[in-house]
Image (cartoon, rainbow, N blue to C red):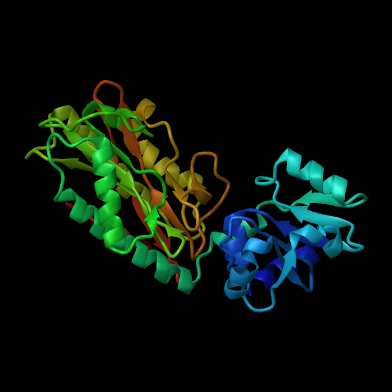
Length: 346
């Protein structure tokens, strides 16, 4: 079905074929998980190009109708008289394009304008079953991990503990290297692991996600291991980010511009006087990659459609004082209902 949609696009764009190179897109269209595989699709045929190492496993993984082709034979054997081939311009390198032009003289290569990524933005029923199960595993993992937090633990130690719990709960692994940081270091939006130990009274920011059946999840929470949420400034920052998160969620509806959803979160933070401390986008699409289309940002030209899954994650980051980020995953159902997938609170 997915390959048939691509074949319709090939005809519409008057291409002779498309060459899919991005691993996530290859998997999405034909089920192949190997590290070396390209999918060559014509209006009537789909062929996986790979090497000897993957012939047997590919035949097990591939959807019905896709044939395996030995890359040693060269792409020319598949191209024949085709004169225009669509390529994934955001993934293929200059060196690879030069190689294609050398091997296929007389063939023109045209960008496909994120053809597969646009399909991946809309999740089907089976994908949503996987994603929702992944979210449950992620939330249970965070709840279990929360119980293990202790003063004196280091960032690396906590990361390994988090992975161990995630694996025990059924995750394949992390969606991305987790961000675990303490106190003032929470002002680092993408904190890198350091040799820091959790001190008494410090808050803990945990930004992580797990993979389940190749699909990613993602959430961020800030924990206070002491009774109150810090001083008055800390409380104001937290409540501002919390309200910004909720404001963005309230703005979500089918047909709404993602730039306006971003604005809904950003305006709350600006009104509270923290505008210059919120320097990233409000959210991002999520699926086979942790960051994919659509972008929930000021510059986004995309609108909300049924079937989309994306994050809402406003934040405030003040150097020397620390940061707050609250991140949730959202799903817009085929009926247009907005569902907050991440229910975890503490």
